Image (tube, rainbow, N blue to C red; front, side):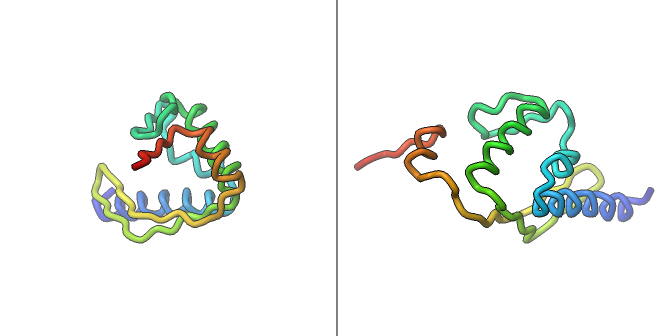
Length: 108
């Protein structure tokens, strides 16, 4: 498979995953992840696909129907990077959300 074919395939896989997310198919979306996935910068999310799934289930409870829009995709034979936006509404009250997450405010 040529480098261009690999890039096209990677782009198709990414777009399919985003389509699955936007259609509410979390299991379909998660097919893009390796079973040993590690999400960096996600406080309290332990390594592994089941833990990532639990995080996204909680996320979708707080932000039901949130949609992903891809703005840019950069591809090469070994990596895919996408610039994206999330758009949706919060379902839980802001106070409840802040209490149940690791956000902290610096009050000056």
